[in-house]
Length: 198
Image (tube, rainbow, N blue to C red; front, side, top):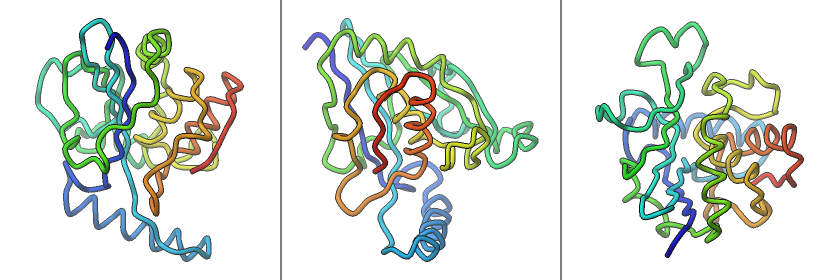
């Protein structure tokens, strides 16, 4: 296997943050479901592992305090909640492209990895694009894309910008990925990719 891009769907709160993340996610989904007149869904966090030239690159957007490894491939950082809160480490996230690194909660991924590409060119393009991802505030819609900015935004933006057919990529059955639409919309505004909202 020379190159691949694997997508992981991880239940919200399965890893770092545990009960707090799970509880706040459930509350968010209850309010969203009532507002949108639909049933509640399971919420997912997404991450990628890109294999290229004998190395696995773990790509994820996560709180800065999730892992203490000093060489974890941090590409950029942003604020969580409000831009001013970002001065405090607790309210900062980081975008990682960690060569030979790991996704801390990948063992909780539903149905394991989903192979979205075996293309060497697309794998290289995803790796190159990570540094271009806009560092907007997590949980807000600062760029007016109609959805909150979070880890799913990074994943959908990278896959859309690298030319994947986004109509074929969706969360597990009965699940939702808040933030996914923001990435698709932002990618479409910069690269003209076809959009699909899971």
